[in-house]
Amino acid sequence: MAAILEVKGLKAFYGQTQSLYDVGFEIENGGITTLLGANGAGKTTTLRAICNMVRTDGTIRFESREIRGLATEEVVRLRIGHVPEGRGTFTTLTVDENLRIAAYTRKDKAAIAADLERVFTYFPRLKERVQQQAGTLSGGEQQMLAIARALMLKPRLMLLDEPSFGLAPLIVVEIFRILRRINEEDKVSILLVEQNAALALDLADHAYVLETGRVVMSGPSSVVKNDENIRKSYLGY
Amino acid sequence: MEQFLQQIASGLANGAIYACVALALVMIYVSTDHINFAQGEMAMFSTYLSWQLMTWGLSFWVAFVLAVALSFVLGVVIERAILRPLHTAPVLSIIVVFIGLLAIFNALAGAIWSYLIKEYPSPFPKGSFGIAGVIGPHQLGVVVVTLIVLTLLFVFFRYTPLGLAMRAAAQNPQMARLVGVRVDWMLALGWGLAASVGAVAGIMVAHIVYLDPNMMGGILLYAFASALVGGISNPAGAVAGGFIVGILENMVAFAGNQIEKATGVYIIGNGEKLTVALIIVIFVLTVKPAGLFGRVVVKRV
Image 1 (cartoon, each protein chain N blue to C red):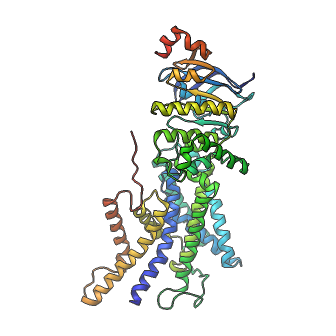
Image 2 (image 1 turned 180 degrees about the horizontal axis):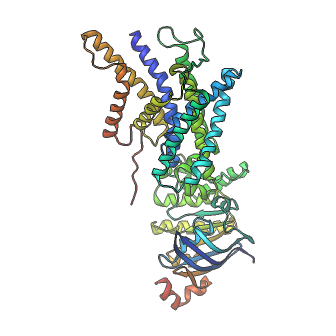
Image 3 (image 1 turned 135 degrees about the vertical axis):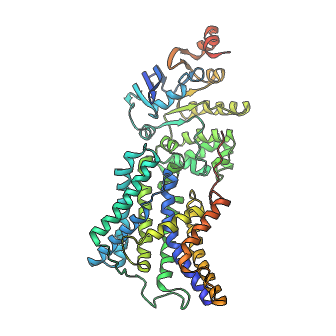
């Protein structure tokens, strides 16, 4: 299968500080890839680099097209849905407005309405809260809203930054089950960044391990999961 | 009693003007955290544009619409050409730019149209409407026009996708980019709309204060007071603040006159209106720093 996203020799800088040195990975079309690593390894920065939210160097090819250097809003228009660290809720807008703004770049009105209904079948709780100010939602609900918002873009690829962060274990399980469905039923490829390596390896088919801004190892999830050395040295369990 | 109602009505008319300028200030403030000190002078310049168009033979309302549209373009151009390159500059530099713009517009208007005070027509002829003895046609017209403009803006921001995108860009610019909103253009549009609303205020008030390059100086102060009283981060609050300040200043002068009439002692009158308005602002901000309708920002750390 062809890769939907290819990253090669990616470097990233915050001002004068370099935080990625050599990151390379691929996501298969329709696949789920996870980036693992300790705090500060460069996982979030990698996602931000794809959307041109930091200064970068290297190659980022999406559907065989070089996208490095495109403005963030143009990258998004290629239908790359980014669920950012901290969920990025528009706190003063209602849940409904949060979802409608995500479809801002789309012109297919009928399909948008259908997608809204579909999103509500994944997250019925959002439907109950549709007129509520998004800032008043619980953490788990805001995470659902963030994923739902990315879905309203009708993405080809979804970038998820620690969707399990700060959530109760039961809600995390629910969210990961929904991510699986999104991948299988909506044919969305997924790039998942996670602290919770065990959880991520269960969902993903491929894993890359980052350490201080470099990819230090990679392989199919099943291999990475069962390699005791990798687990002990990089994943800490 | 009739005098009392008169004062309320004239307060409403002034308040409508303050509300418009305050709203223009707030529209730029919520998306950039900057107070545009040149807002008043931009409105004055727009008013001169409409005056110029009228002297070229256009009717009032055609000149009105054209001037408001030109102001929109002017606002967009100022944002794109002057403020965009400064988006990473420190706040102080931007304040200096605003003060520079204020001086430039003032001098430019003086150079083009001279500093001589000009009469400015009212589109609401005498005896057309109004309530005899309470509110004149021009004052009533001002209130109606501003209410229409405010309603249009409300509908735009509340119910259109572009309005939603502008609110999203103001609230969380980074996330707005991540849903594909072109945030830079939203800021420019915000500047355009603010300039347009200011233009409406200038054109409406010019018949009352007469047309001259310094006509908006006092009004900008009142508008600033209104925005602060209502809550600088809340557009609806700014509008309410405008009407509150407008009515309050007249009530203060009215009360002063009544006291003088009854006791012969002069305490307060028309001359002290601005002082009193500013005292009220300080009082409100001391008791409620976020303004009457402002949101207190609580951040989780």
